[in-house]
Length: 370
Image (cartoon, rainbow, N blue to C red; front, side, top):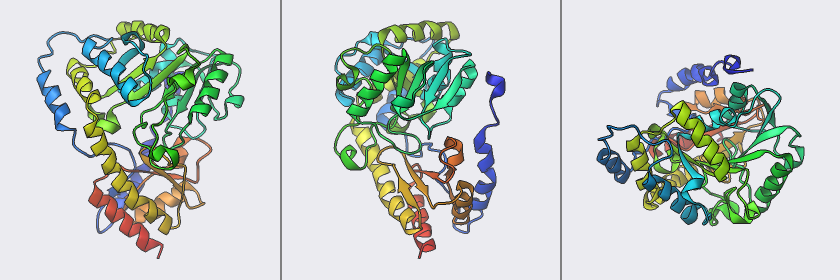
């Protein structure tokens, strides 16, 4: 297995549904790919402009200011107070790291990479590129011998599943029994909506209540794409076990994986400013408040979705049939088939469309269920 074994990019299969939805008299409402539509906050754009005299190569390890900002952010926002700059590293977006982590860890044929049953497909892609074997399993008791890397996605994409402290601690114990690296993909951690997550911070795999007093074998991955509208900046980071971070740094130096210096400066500013994150979360909250009841009125059931950027919905039939129904309403979603073999009857709808377009989608959905 390797890069030649990758299938065609799945989103190409959605194009006929895009054309069908675009033909709606009142136009397309695109709720498919979760690409931010709101402006990058001015405080971050100004920081980027300040750093445009980037004549020298940037440091792979990150500027001192950025590394300190990451450490401070974990303490302030994620309940992880004991990191040092040796525990953190900026990355060129989080998808890059997810896809390359098995390779950077030296995994190959005979090794197993575990990922959620309903999952962002890049976990399996990363295993394939390295020649390892991807295995879908949620229950730590079912994680197999031979696992070398285990991915947890909390809150999950697409289903919004969120792990609590006790669940994370059990996952850490099991990963250590197996001798596997446990990586928490935590990119939606600022977006809690229901149950305890409406008021409590979503825990990190690096939370001291989870780690048992040591970060050995643990990684936390985070992106600024959604909380700060920096998807176009490719601004993300990884933190955790200093030994693994050191190994990743060495490999990334050889490979030239260096976030551009202006982006590093903008990241440091973004991580120190909580106000814009609260503003952005409120925008997502407003869209969610319109879309969720409208989906239910149209006959969909929303599963999970207690946190994160998406609504994970089903009407009890194959996702491509639901995609067709939505397309006839001028709404483009993402089919559950893209997220593994266990979600063929679900569709994913993102909260990344302007409020007026989400309101239009809600009106169409509500009317269709009348």
